[in-house]
Length: 261
Image 1 (cartoon, helix red, strand yellow):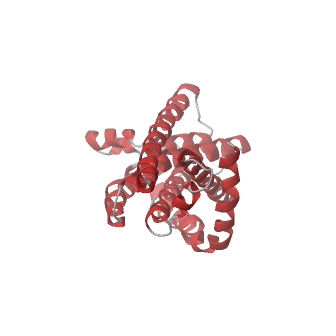
Image 2 (tube, rainbow, N blue to C red):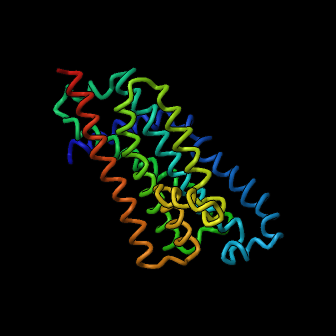
Image 3 (cartoon, rainbow, N blue to C red):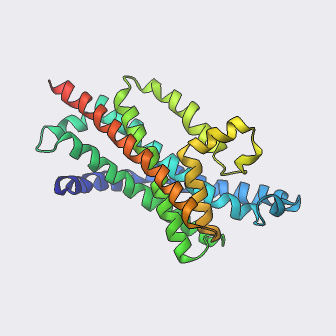
């Protein structure tokens, strides 16, 4: 664990020199989405009997926690796709790390720790924006939403780590983005209840980790969280984290150990 924590200094130092490049994707875009869709479009939705359809809440209050969860997903995929693939293919950072006493699993866990740091900071800033819009809920609810967003981000991170180590060319990310990221962003319940979709699509949404994260964040910000549904959402997301980590460890070791041998 000491070797894992030591790597955080490297990742944070790198981020301190490059953070300006992530401002738009991490902060500005969610703010624009919240303003345009939560307030702009939300005004029309609320005027057309939106609160009756959305369980008695305004469209802004409905969409805000959904955007928090999808922001965590987007941050996770951003930090786990090209950023990971490049360290195998282009700048060989992982190969340099494994030339030291660091094991492959240490490299993997150290990078995951940094992604957790990115998720926590990005989602914390977004929660401050939600508080400014008056939809963050209580302090306890905001903290629960933050932890939920980090968890759904990690549930997306570990499988994408494995995918990034498994693929041979960066063109393979087109499949991930078009068939994974975009559909989950649009059909995870962030913008409308998934019950309004056809049954087949509805059940596909239930299988995605993002829907569970959206539900958790929404329950916490609205103050409607209950024990057993929350446990179910958390357990399902943890399965994604663990299974994704096992796959990432296998693909990391195959790529790094196989390359060195």
